[in-house]
Length: 94
Ligand SMILES: [Zn+2]
Image 1 (cartoon, rainbow, N blue to C red):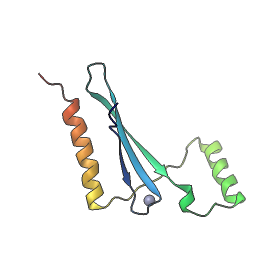
Image 2: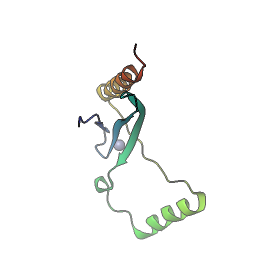
Image 3: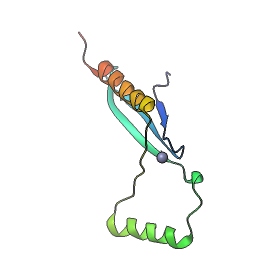
């Protein structure tokens, strides 16, 4: 099976974007998904109090803090190229 995923690393080298898509019943890409990865190993392990505060924040608000990714011009162009390729392949043909 062809690997259709694409990984783009954040400029801090601690995060990354993984892009892939599902294939519809007609054989064309149907849904694009992007996962933002955060590497905790890049940072020092937070102390226990910080981890408790984070856990309490998630329990209280129901919202899990997300990560962010900073892309260079080249990687931003790679992101756009991947999405454009997805859109072209997902477009119904004749
Ligand atoms: Zn980053």
